[in-house]
Image 1: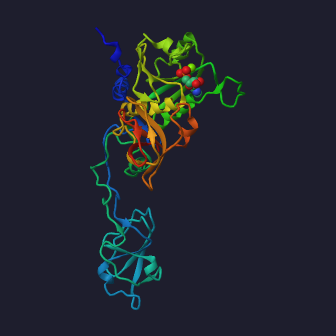
Image 2: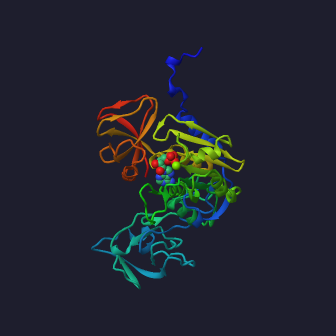
Length: 411
Ligand code: AMP
Ligand code: MG
């Protein structure tokens, strides 16, 4: 017989790790498509990029100055410069560069091709700047001020690996090796749906009892920051038929439905009413904030993750469950944020048996983290001032000032 006295409701909570794994398993890799570089920002590279050319593609000058043979200048000093006739002018982009004859110099600009026969460049500041004849005030080591062909990237080698997030520098190097399009995983297409008859569009008049809708915009922005493509469905009323109707035209064009709100224990919980027993399982996760969670599949169409309605719960849940799953589905090699160990500035208490995520401000200069606001899951102003989440393990209930805590860096 069941021993009711020792019954611990914590045993019925799903662990953060289990729910995270379940959410991740709902999303499959998005297909690979070829995109022009200008449409690749934030996406993951789907194959290794092998450099079709070397960088630099040819040896060129690192300075404005004179291309020389270093052996012609061994005697040059400030007092007794070496004078050489200037036989050519080589601006950047000149493609017909004649060889440098012994005992002569070519005037050369930064990025211009080094003439065959030259092995060094003397910067213009170390010369008299002459155009017919030039006086050179310094000797030059072989290779001085020369950018050697292939010293950065060698043709035929991997310049970006599969799964790399394409940021500015990565797109820059792809362009530099002459690639116009890259194979990337198509962004995860996310329907962001907010429910609640109390919600009013920002900019409209607010009556007592109403609040401005914030989760939809916030989650859509988070989706975009994670490289996804959001479609915002706001102001879906707390009505099951209206909820299903809002989804109909998106059945073939979404990978994931993200809802917020409508999953608590009250009445009028439209998300729960519409989705329970309809492919979505609701559960309580051992986490604060963000205990009420759900996930599954909507009518064999798209994956569903139901986030709690309180704004901080919603965002923390997105961070913990949705963002890593979205990044994995979109082919990213790195799916987690940077985690740092920090020194807690004040003391902290946390509930037993739940992983707590508190908002904080981490100072990289001191390594200290200061709590930002109380634990309440409605305190969006505090979240907006935070730059990290403190992750307090399930078994920790009290942390004195000076304790070491893990902080998840949000920016
Ligand atoms: P619910 O789970 O629907 O009961 O929502 C929990 C709390 O979050 C309530 O205070 C709601 O008013 C609030 N909430 C729900 N959805 C949103 C939203 N889209 N924007 C702002 N607050 C919301
Ligand atoms: Mg609601």
